[in-house]
Image (cartoon, rainbow, N blue to C red; front, side, top):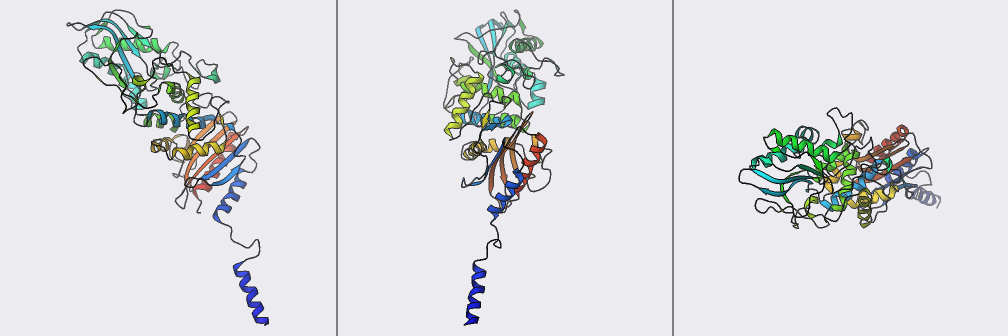
Length: 444
């Protein structure tokens, strides 16, 4: 009898260990590790981690409280740009004419250089060298030269009417910001006044018109009038166009190095973006703007009564996030404004929702890779996170953020967001990197 009781007691100990001796589950171990990692970050910081496949919350520490986003704002800008345009679309800069081409090659009338918000447009050397873009004044001049233009009786007119004329966002009082440069629908060389980048243009559309005038002259196409600014009148026809790189490439250029200029330009163009798409259909020798349903195109399908503004752009981006079930407060596209706020949980929800959207591969590929490129090239250069975490950074004077995706050791994807406000940014980055290492090393 005694032996039987001892055997039962031993069996009970094996199948039901005393508290504290049971092996913790991988998920509970991760949660404990994350809790320790976030210890000491203060009440103004928050973090949230979820499983990408199931949506299950893996960890939350003040994860539902909105925080200043810094450049994590660009995640919302990127989502809206992809959702409105599609990954394969591009932005057009068009040369529009009012007049007629005479048999001798003389264009009787003006040429209007109308910007479509392409952040890569400029000189051939700058556009190609900086962005791999073919959108340049030289390319437009080449098109007219090939078409037989010999002279222009009017002037080259810089048309930035697709956007308002405010040069910045709320963080700079809507004037030119040193962290962005002058915003214009007809930006040229990202608003730089010289090749050294030591000054900004005071009048971007006039600057661009002047450079086109010079490019035409270099091809023997004389323009009688002096370059000026103005809006192309109704009834004008498109004579030539150049296009930006695809949206997928624009987002890569924006997010890898956290380019504020690209973000503000793309956000400002959102009100003009077609909800169902459109493209240029060429007809004869002149190219009227005719929407078609297959390839989104800002220049072709935008409502001509709509003007791109920062405020209108934030409304579009906010509504797009809302359509994904995500709450955010936006004041600009780059994150320079401290009014850009969202909770870590809401960022995680955005990132998960994007996985189910067309074009996700472009969104994912635009994010810096830990230890490899962009703003994460110098972080997490070893350890499990290296090469396995794609995430967007964010930095202001006392704000640091990191949100993205980590492929875990077990092969799953974990989505995370760490937002540190009122913090030492270097300490915050150490915490963020530790979190990413834990997620990439997770074996659950």
